[in-house]
Amino acid sequence: MALQFEILGRFNRARAAQLILPHFICQTPLFMPVGTKGTIKGLTTSQLEEIGCQIILGNTYHLELQPTSQLIDELGGLHKFMNWPRALLTDSGGFQMVSLLHLADITENGVTFQSPVDGKPMLLTPEESIQIQNRIGADIIMALDDVVKTTITGPRIEEAMYRTLRWIDRCIAAHKRPNEQNLFGIVQGGLDPVLRDICVKGLVERNLPGYAIGGLAGGEDKDSFWRVVAQCTAALPEDKPRYVMGVGYPLDIVVCSALGADMYDCVYPTRTARFGTALVPEGILKLTHSAMADDTRPVDPTCACMVCKRYTRSYIHCLVTKDAMGSQLLSYHNLFYMLKLSRDLHSSIIEGRLPEYVCGFLQKMFPKGDVPEWVCNAMEVAGIDISSCCAPFPSSQD
Image (tube, rainbow, N blue to C red; front, side, top):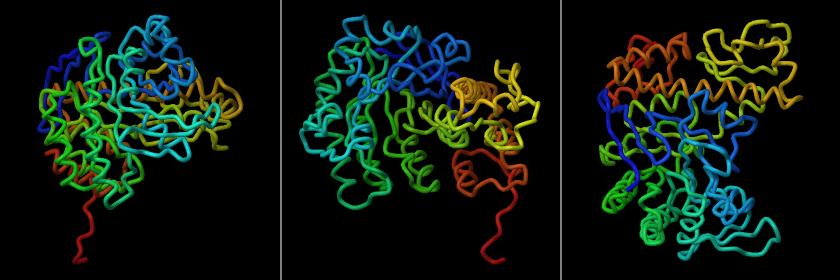
């Protein structure tokens, strides 16, 4: 095992921890920006360090297509290749095949898909996914799992969960760098609590360095989403990191952290920036809106980032969707926002003031008190009293 996980503070189910990885000592809860091909679009690695980024996620599938894991390995690994001194996590490549490619066919052997280069059938096995990730050299590598959208029901969910458990053993056997890279298993099982429970138990028996909750953020309703997170975090080991894959909305991160999750990744903050949308305490701000044309305020007057200190909404409005500089500035701001959110969660847990922090967050986002019912239900399970910032729900007798 190439990590140490030390819990520094708790508030009921929430934890603030130190995650020591080969390349960096991280503070959790933490958000990981997605750098598909070894780059966060429009930002340099020094800018990412400047705003407090701790781990970047790289997509195995894209890196293997170009420049190839072979070349990355020959050039000293991905850290050196992209000039990033801090931690890296790579996914298994399975999700991209299922989401990006037509005719991906999953069998016991692996994922068969059409090559995007010449259309020939190609096979990604658990063994090959791990070999590619061993060459890339990230601090955390993910097991190849059988990915199914949560909105699918029936026997396919059960088949995928059991196959994910069989594949984890093949991943463990193929992993040649366990003292330098940490292999995380992925809990599957759709929205079925029984299947999720079987998967958690099976993965925990393998005593992995960390565990991910997969198969969410794929269109399921929010009530189902938080319940799966709550169930998995309650059943996973206390002394190992817990990673909710694909989660990037600020509200979701606050809720999942209150329920005991530690790590998150998503393209949302940078993708939404490219469409001219900024993340702000009130929710979002659309810089493309005509009202922004002569607005001389910063994107977020309460934000200390370089963009909010130096540029106006009017200037960014001129640039967004027309000039690369617009999406660069908003990507910088949005990632700053997400990384500050992570730090604020960490310090509020350590200082024993998580309920106050969560209430302040919700009051800004829902000034009328119309906090969604799923958030209220999740916070009740997390043991966090948010009654002061919630308007009462109409009872069924009304």
